[in-house]
Image 1: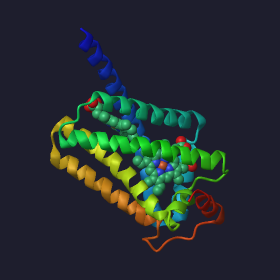
Image 2: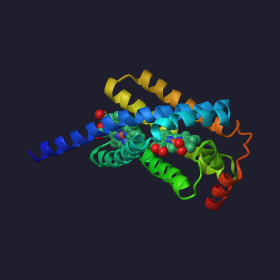
Image 3: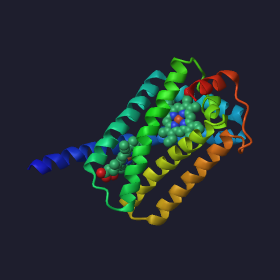
Image 4: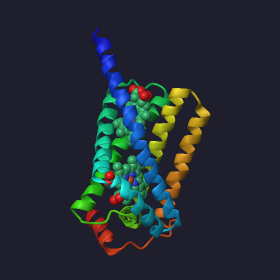
Length: 208
Ligand code: HEM
Ligand code: HEM
């Protein structure tokens, strides 16, 4: 009886993690597409972000997105405690989730403090500052690459565990890795390194 209750509770947390995961994936998809527009230059990225901001910077939408991020981290960590990861797929799910927990807290914390404490416009140059400044780039390249890789691994493993289709899962993960690489290339001017406006450079120098 006790284990039935436990399973029921785990089932509820898993269902809520699933539902919020699907909702958050919509934001993440638009967010990453926005970053891919940087392949056409910083101005294009900022132009597209200005449009997307009309939706996700609306106070109701933004509060909702930020609460879901927090909820996803809390429920994800609870699921890890309850999950006995045995297969490689299950282990990838757990480790990608762990990296996402770290990244989401660090990334959203940085964006909010950049905006409200440093009074910066957290646009293309906010992310590019760390990626183009030596030696911070050695931290920020893996930091952003692993974020995009982790979300695509997390989602492709779920697809594999639910459908058993390894081919489709590997395909999804590969698309994610290529997108991660393209974002890094776009934000560093194909590793030719970009000039960063003074306030952003100062911000990153104060950190590292
Ligand atoms: C960033 C956004 C995230 C999305 C979009 C997402 C999405 C999902 C989805 C759709 C599932 C499948 C649930 C099911 O099988 O019905 C899942 C499972 C899981 N997620 Fe996440 N997740 C995210 C973040 C996290 C984080 C931050 C963690 C860990 C700290 C985490 C840990 C897990 C674990 C352990 C499972 C397996 C649950 C189980 O089968 O027992 N997830 N995730
Ligand atoms: C898994 C990958 C990622 C997730 C889940 C994620 C999530 C988020 C979230 C939740 C926000 C806050 C949005 C809000 O204000 O409500 C945000 C903002 C931001 N992110 Fe990410 N992010 C990811 C990857 C990246 C990458 C790869 C970059 C750049 C290289 C980046 C750059 C930014 C910037 C510049 C903002 C500020 C947006 C604004 O001020 O309008 N993100 N991100």
